[in-house]
Length: 394
Image (cartoon, rainbow, N blue to C red; front, side, top):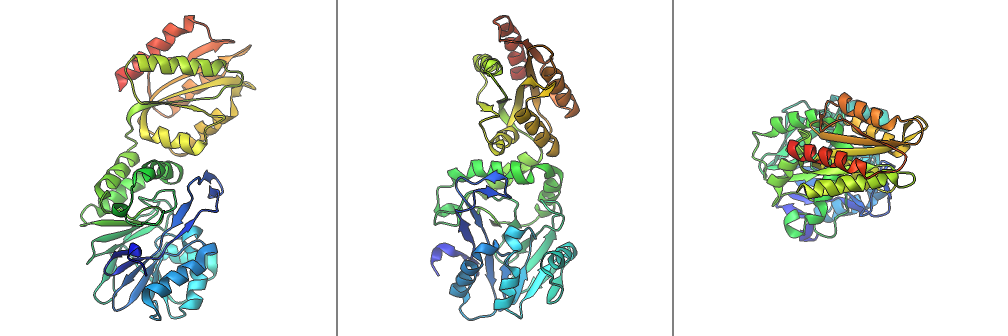
């Protein structure tokens, strides 16, 4: 097997790339595809860490065969039961009938529920150790990162953490597997997007996991999606720490809906006033155009948020309402917030947006700006005051 799949002397990458699927979870765009990462730990016994999406099972088996030849697999460790990582389990068992499936109690319950497997399993608890002969694996339960059964596996001799979906990123791997063998810049935005879309609701469990793992000498992180992190390991952990604390970077996202351009004009004037006040970066999203996936990424990344909406059927414009629902579901915290709404004959948007910010307990930069019919220059001063308040709070 090519050295590009060699993580170190005893660990091999046997994952696959998916450049055919357009939507992850049938929801989130995959313009650059995605990888499903699986690994072999090779001691006197061999453990497979996670599997791949069922459509790529044969590619997984081929890679295993290239790595270990005719040697049997002794264990399959399931860190995460989501089907993109577990749906090859039955075929792997057929290829290696003596393999033992390793998981915690919740994993094994799901294993039976999804695949009817209740024999040939080994239940592990938090802190348990599995000896492979020369290599050993220790298991750390990390519930709700981002499913209830999730756990991470630490290879003690290699100082290597198999982290499941944590520290993962969208984007297929373009040849190299280790970050030190590639240009990782393309994956940073995809890591933020993956966190915001998939893990974002679970900041508190992520913090608990980081604290649990903080005493380990981790030198390599092997997630189930995206690059294997070695060179950039400290940066990756710092990103997760900051995101899970909802600590945005200095900058502002202006997310707005518009039907005929008047709310968009207000958004643009707000951006101009913020720029004149010296704030950067300023990220603008027309919610009828920008994928929600990208909008969530940027809101998780930056500290300040401005939302604008026209009144629509005595409520909010539907794409704006969809964003508010997504932010509520993720319990996004610690944001500096401003909002504006427009109407023609009966205003509702500004009030609803102000109430939303109050419900989220965000730091309000001021009262909602309300516009009747077209944008007027008299609103420029109000925009300027709101912009200055945002900048002052950052």
